[in-house]
Image (cartoon, rainbow, N blue to C red):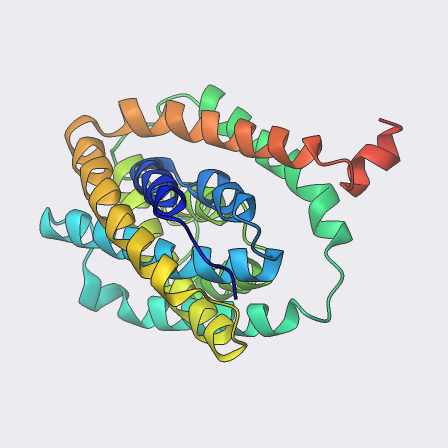
Length: 261
């Protein structure tokens, strides 16, 4: 069991605050929180488990902020949230037996594609559009698939949910962000349960970081509500590109070997 100095805890809480602020607007909080946890000497699985616990507070805080302003109906979206949580729990269980090489190679390419879509797609604003999929079908297919992905791998889940809500459900950018945070909250619950049962969560650190995440996410969500797509869209593009670069910077990423880097 690792021992954490007060300076280390303060650093982790600061990282959680910043992660919560960014994640509540455009996702990608794990870009900040997971490296910070790994720097303490945690094993990767404990870093992932503890990150899911602290992220639970951030996504919950953002969901409350968006719901209080009427951007997401929690009761109406509860069935989708339950499905997302179940998908995430199954994904977390599968993470121990499914090789992640294919996901690691494909993810940077997909994230860059999402960044390009949001950067150059015209008329990306907070106005809802015609949906291409019924809410029932969306909840039966897209929600559990992305929930499973969040449990088995994780990076970019918020971006994928955002893309799905905008392109398939016809939501405006702000509404898509609000619904994404609620489903992120659900997938975090599913994954945390599995990681906790496996003993892969540092409870004290996760709770302390969770307090900072809650505050940061509340501030970020409030800012997103005030500014809307003019803030969310560029930040989402930046987060997608940053996550792709981070993944490609890992010498072990299979795509680097395939490209001869």
